[in-house]
Image (cartoon, rainbow, N blue to C red; front, side, top):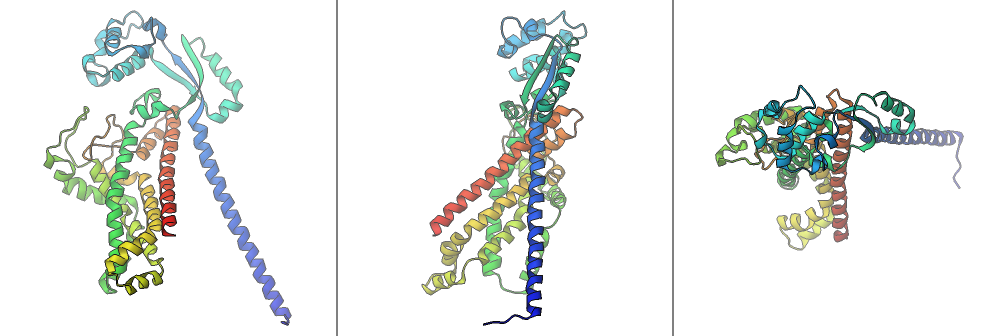
Length: 424
């Protein structure tokens, strides 16, 4: 039987007390984190939905009798625009050829014609937007605002609007929030993800295998390892400057597509410079490369030594051991680290701005040599505008970005679980 003296009992009480303190600290940290994340998500959702009051200077049924305006064909829209008169003395058919980048109506697409008609004839104006909470709890203020503007517009609508709608994915950027969307930025982000994974994942895994399993323990390799750890913490803007100097300027004949005499389509205007998707993809790939290398090395170190020794004991070569045992066993951890690195790349803005991402672009990227923009830059551009409705669009774009990140992480989890089941 063990007898505890007074000092032992005091030590046990002290340790228990410290344990309870740290338990409270850990629980409090988790609760605070969840609260802040909940506030962030609720704030985004609050701005994604809500009531808007929309005023039209002219009635669509008057300017397009017989059918809804959106049902008119391209030729019918041109005729409506050319025949338009008697509604606004300041708006004449002669102005139509100078509208929207001074292009003749016959050169415009059906969508462009509709946008010209919508903006310049109907002249819609969003009187005021309300958040989701305001729409639910401040209905009296909304009705008062509606009645205040009722006599100022022939058509005044009050409707509940979801800014996250199919039009957000169909439309490109526009100066009018009702016609603006993220299509170009969404495709640009997908191109960036594809290139980053394609370039960084094989290079990062290969470099980690060499450093962990082939490289000798000498001063050069230790120096390389230290630099990799340092590069993982370098600010992203530095990688942007590297991409500007190397990929945009030094390798411009390659990254611009000049060496292929690449011909752009879909009305894309190009000056054949290096500010293209491939330059941005290479820049982001280099940025996440140290993270992938470090994660892969840690995954390889987690492989049990008994598994490796057993493989060698059965006569397997070093490469056979790596290919058939080390990589399959550590693939789930490698995949998780790679997805986390790519998720960081998706949210980057600074290096892409330096490399040359466009802040306003209306044509979709058709190749790795196209000009581009991405969702974070689109969100930043919208939040910088003074109109409140563009902040609603930014909130809906943030939801899309979060869904894209969650999809990547979910894919990694599914692949990881399948790999673990096969391994077991």
